[in-house]
Image (cartoon, rainbow, N blue to C red; front, side):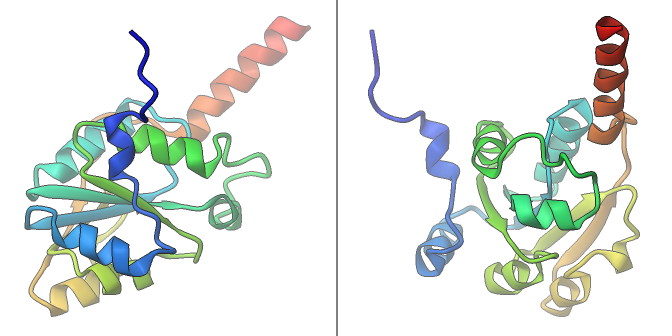
Length: 172
């Protein structure tokens, strides 16, 4: 039986260019709201574990993704991101732990954090809580900031290195 309607997870995708709609939708999410951000380019076990742990710190989880241009400015490599924003957004939205997903084109998500006022702000264990963008703002309105230790030492950069090395071996 064919379905012509988009999958239900696509309702979790919130376009930041529609600010009033974004704010209204975020206000309907159960509180406390957890906010995290990143590129989430080639999804791996470390990502999904981290997102599940982030969700456990509140009643809902909003993930903000760097746009393609914002990702390139991070210096992760000339070929990054591998997956375009629209694909990364869909994959993240499909995850059970994620309540909503949006994106930002700036170098940091500070404007989104100020706009959406999450009660909980999280980043991965490579960030010290006081260095997390938006930490002083979230703490200032009574929220909490967490750095989640990595359970699985995975990275997209390392994964891509393995793929590239294996590709070179099979092409020679």
